[in-house]
Image (cartoon, rainbow, N blue to C red; front, side):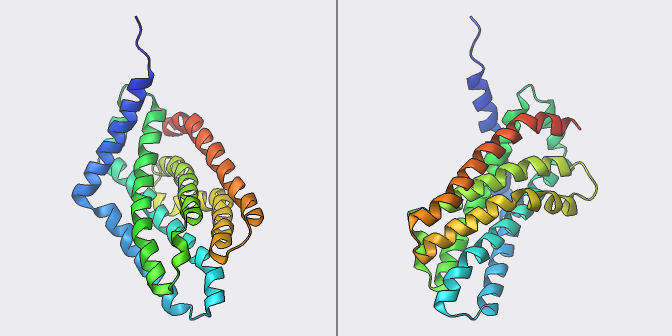
Length: 230
């Protein structure tokens, strides 16, 4: 009897995630770079934006998502470039597993790193800006959905750009135009929760965020094999 391919697929995804997490928690190079960058941005905005409370609530989402986007891009770039420089990427591609499992494994590990950074940055932001509303479930759900969409498309494009000499510059050039819908939707939905807007105003950007996550995760799943073949 032929065994189902699903267990081996999920085992491959889990193996890639385990490898990335183990390597990172031993070196802490990626998380350290993302955290230092994020904290610097938050501190700079804190001293640069001496605004009234009402104005701060309106710009809070933009400040946070700018921080998350740049830190996430830094993490994506370093994650794939480290794999390439150490020869691990070639080993992964030669492994007898579906290459979509490699994509999901890398995406999940990148998402974990980004969520760890966000879990540290959000309390610090709340302390500096005296903004307790960021801990409400709706806002945290937007952070999760926005991070998923950003990492899904970012992992695909980082796998594409890592093969080039100008990968550090090329990834942001490719990523930010494609990620504009998820960033704008996340900022608008986040602002709605922070300013106490009605759910009728929050649902349109929130729905766009969900649709973006589904579509771009599916697209990345379908084209990842062709991207890494190039």
